[in-house]
Structure formats: structure tokens, C-alpha cells
Image (cartoon, rainbow, N blue to C red; front, side, top):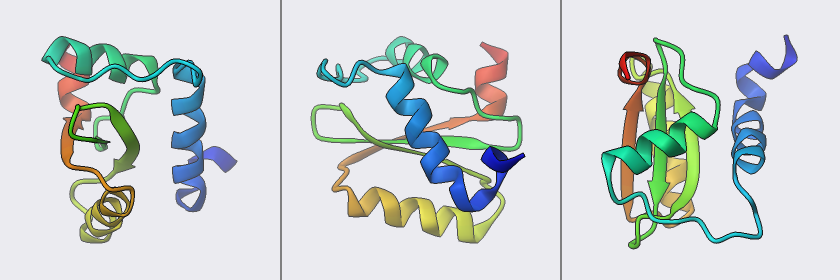
Length: 102
């Protein structure tokens, strides 16, 4: 399936992000575990071997979201590079197992 191709994963994540958020509305800060859980449930949940990484600004408003395999060094490096490039100040890591247990 085309949207599971790793080369288009960032685009797929962005499309999921846009679908789950009203672009005209300013994102609220993710100030509690409940807010993070609600935010993650609006987008496609991570698989058990994935991790969702949400990069936020100083007010904890999401700037960028990535999916990665936490066991692959290249995925971690690529994800952190993307987060730094958007100017994030904070990061929230949501492993797939954690979301499945909720």
C-alpha cells in the first residue's frame, strides 16, 4: 500500500494531522496527560512497534508530529532533526504500547 511506504510517511502524518485539527483554530497547549491522549486519539494511533513524537513550542502547542520505530537509530536521528528544524522547545513521546493500553 502506498501510504505505508516509509518515503511518504512524513506526508501521511501531516495529512492525518491536518484532518484531525481545524486549521483555522489555534492549537491548544498539551498541558496534561489527558490532553496528550485526546490529541493522539484524533490522529492515527501508533502501531505497537512505533512511537509518535509530538514536538511543541514553549506553550506546549504542537508544531510537528512524527512517527518512528524507536529501535532504529536512523529513524531517531531523522525524527530529532525534523523536530529541531521546526524550532521545537519540547517533545512528547507516545509509544504504541502505551496508547493501546489506554
